[in-house]
Amino acid sequence: MTTLALQFEQYGAWRTGVLNSLAEFRSWLQQHDLYDAQADERVQRIQGVLKSDRLKVAFIAEFSRGKSELINAIFFADYGRRILPSSAGRTTMCPTELRYDEAEAPCIRLLPIETRLQEASTADFLDVDAHWHTVPLDPSSPDGMLDAFRHVVETNHVTRETAESLGLYNENDPDAAYALDADGMVEISRWRHAVINFPHPLLRQGLVILDTPGLNAIGTEPELTLRLIPDAHVVVFGPTPA
Ligand SMILES: Nc1nc2c(ncn2[C@@H]2O[C@H](COP(=O)(O)OP(=O)(O)O)[C@@H](O)[C@H]2O)c(=O)[nH]1
Ligand SMILES: [Mg+2]
Image: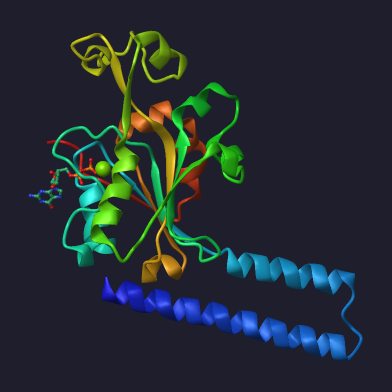
């Protein structure tokens, strides 16, 4: 991990260097009256690409393969406890992105599962704050962090019909019976997607982690298959059961 952190730091420094050179080049063009609208557009585009540059790593595996535990070990070891909920059984959880954007205060943004009823993808909701539930994060408080992260695994018990309308229950699925509790209700994640904005040094450098609840999520949330996973530069597949 230290090597990765070092390489990441070097890459970040290289990016900052290119941005500085670009700014100098722009001043030079301006001084010589060579800075027209076309040059401006080019400079802005290059700046945009460099600033939004991210390395995305997605963790894909069936539930209980240690994805969340590994993410805890990498990002939250200093807290001395599991910050990202991890459990021995099936965790009902939404796809969770871990990243850092310093323009925003540390927080967890959660998109309610009911947004699945609308014909819009998670990406369509990304910039619309009104749809998201925001939980502030205080990285200096382990207890506060733990409390905040509990929200990511909140669930609702809904009727079969509701779960079906949300696309989270299919009676023809051989596993359907397992999804029902003793009262015939279905336990579903309260959230469709979580974005954690946390100032870890690696995330500051532009690393983005995607934690997925299990392979079943790939079937229920097409966005994972169509956007989030193809967008990832690295996909880490977990072991399949023996
Ligand atoms: N012995 C052992 N247990 C692990 C390891 N990684 C995870 N676990 C345990 O396996 C269970 C499932 O881990 P979790 O990270 O929640 O799995 P996920 O569903 O893939 O995110 C938890 O009880 C973890 O503590 C490991 O490397 N060794
Ligand atoms: Mg997990």
